[in-house]
Image 1: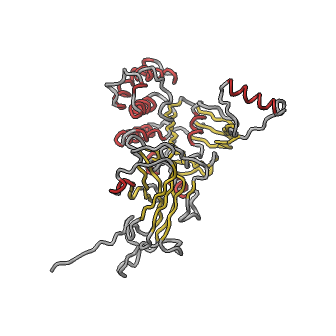
Image 2: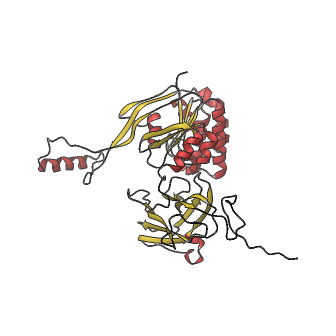
Length: 419
């Protein structure tokens, strides 16, 4: 059997813009740059430009009917790979062959024309895939019903909310006749009920023998939908195997030997003007503590920068297991004195004491989250800045527990007896 997707030594690079380079297709900027080189006597000298490789020597095969997860942290090259496979961008090296029609949902805003209605965009998408009007007609009612767009299908999509746009885009990609479906984590735009609906539909698609490439940071979604995974890091494939092996590797990759490590925003990433995280660390009351036990007093120390103050900014932390299961979440506006806090431009430091005798013995992660009343800036479970930490000896104060308690948390509740 021939593979339906065949990628060989694939590479994609971009020119890194240097300080002082302003040209981005503008003629005046290009002329100014030529003049500067002329004045410096460099007009005939070949300019050496630094290149950033988003993908490098990527090779793998996917066979018909496989459901494969593309895993990796932010910047690993997952979305770039899907764009190359969709022919949105061309590779600089190697080849990517797909034997069949492709349906894709890469990001909100891709694939639809803003000035066409939902109905017109549905037929346009079918035409691009090589389907006849009769074939689209046969699936049209099902597409609209799944997207729950009956009342808005004849509105121009530029008037859609991001959720409406995503629902229709996913429904079109899932219901039209394609052999391969490529899905980036655009599903995060939808509400919880629609996300579940999409996951169910993708499971149905997989059961029909269609091939799916699925990008996600959600370990549970990868486990539920996929049978195989490919782990990417800095544009390279570092592991390819069964889904459980890949999920475990993804959850632990980069953190081995870094228990209780600090995180610093050395690459100037996550740079939303309303809130940019700068550092994250865990401090202990006892300075000699290396691995805390269940009685250790720990404080999360977080620093962030605000470029454009947002009166509705809310910053928080999320504590998860290594598998990505959230244990609890806390926000600064949970504190009554900070409920109406207005932030000014500049750097701000946050300190969050963690409850003692709460977490059981085991491994955990602290993740930074942030949002306002309209949107997430750092949405939980989406590859945000985080640090690992471990708890040891969560047995209890009394000698009753001689082994690890069951469960994720291990609070010691106060009992009383009345005879």
